[in-house]
Image 1 (tube, rainbow, N blue to C red):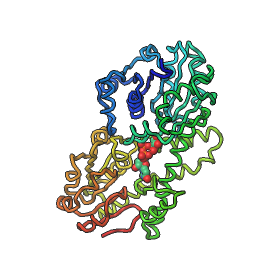
Image 2 (tube, rainbow, N blue to C red):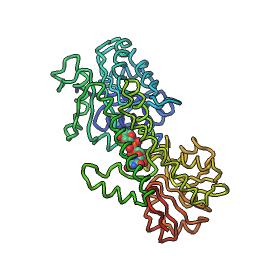
Image 3 (cartoon, rainbow, N blue to C red):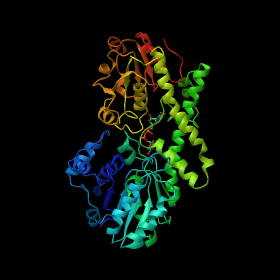
Image 4 (cartoon, protein in one colour):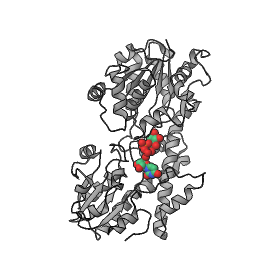
Length: 457
Ligand code: UDX
């Protein structure tokens, strides 16, 4: 049989469900496992319990052709005799702390390892603090009947929500952290470097198509992921810091960003000013990175990330201030429409969503707030049941004193400002994502405000 033909994916959230479906697409036989029986029942019937473009089609296709199956049982995963077990569980921020909560990763090792009585590879994909893989390696050796013949590797995942399939099948790069880097092919792999050889084989369809694969030690692989997220967060907060300065100096941060982007060394990606970053990754990853640096005695090296985080959180406060200005200085008795609830467009994910954070804060200050998101209304209502929700952008805008555009769905760019102008109390709009056309809204009689830009109208 092919060196790597069977793959298990443990943890079937955004990352795991996508990884499982994509591995099936590459031709492998895949078993997905999760402790959440409801999630597994949905996936097994070809349904994806969250919104990710194209994923349900891909998953349903491979459930139907039998290449992709699901289970809630570790012993079934073990009996499947996978060549690689991918760990795809989440590593959230600990309550009241910066550090990552590793309980789910630990639970996978404790659940799986006691069943492993044959040589195999465990590849962690979850984002973890440097040193985790080394610690888990010892745990696996202790628990697995096959002992050190079960090898642990770290293979961080860089996918973005909204582009999950493309990012998995055509990633910018693959990073493979192993205990003993060096085995280039399955045939020259001794027992100690089986992990590298097997994972090279798994990803061969991608590397054959030109995707670079970088093999590192375990700690470096863990660090690449958090370093990438630290850099991306810094880039966003840099341009948002410039937005603060632009507002004070009377400049336009959109023009500034456009001009900076022409410098190839800077580049325009992740340089869009606005309400800043949220979601299940960037905020908690930079905090966990700081916490780990502190434990390692190099907290000074990452002190700048504290600033990055603070600049980011200040954007939310500034947005609320702008909205209040548009409501004559007080939210009491005012109606506020919020367009967007997901942390970014093409997702229904509301984890640490800047849009909802702003909406909730305005509600607390006495306004009546109505939210509309094309996909995330239901998830938002679970988290913030006291906010009102509408079924369309127009319905949310009815009677509003100000509209806040906080998640840049394409749908909001296509709205006709004249039509919306007919239903609001006052034609005031605050664009938290610098994504609407200021001219178009101004021409339709609106006052357009945005972060880091002069008033239009
Ligand atoms: C991110 C990383 O991009 C990905 O590589 C990693 O694996 C997980 O975290 P994701 O959280 O899906 O992915 O979203 P991303 O597209 O990176 O956006 C993150 C946040 O930054 C969003 O809230 C977005 O609105 C914001 N953002 C992004 C900006 O404010 N400005 C930008 O220029 C880009």
